[in-house]
Length: 117
Image 1: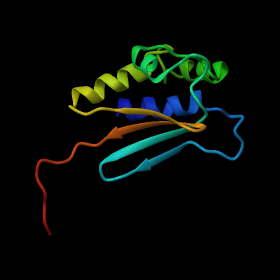
Image 2 (image 1 turned 180 degrees about the vertical axis):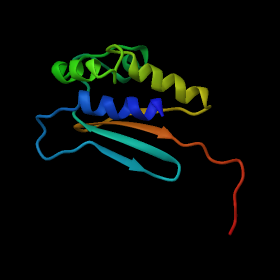
Image 3 (image 1 turned 120 degrees about the vertical axis):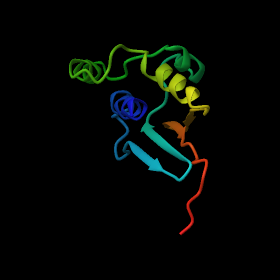
Image 4 (image 1 turned 135 degrees about the horizontal axis):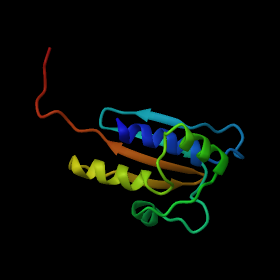
């Protein structure tokens, strides 16, 4: 749950609100959940740097508001936590930049058994 909460908060805080008509989207599939946020990674931030905790507050006022509500601890800690927590489950989270969108793909564990009706 903390992974999903972090990704939702991250999408809200870091999205590019200047992209009119675009929305944050959560797509649920049988094998994964995708968190899509409008906007590219800022400045010199790369996907590899995200995993290491490099971050940039795209919307510092919104970030401070979420910090005051205790939805975030500190800038740069969220995505490394997501990466580590998903790895603990034996899965790999995928961070992608596609055009003017940033996408995080979290694989869902498949059950070790199947119930047939």
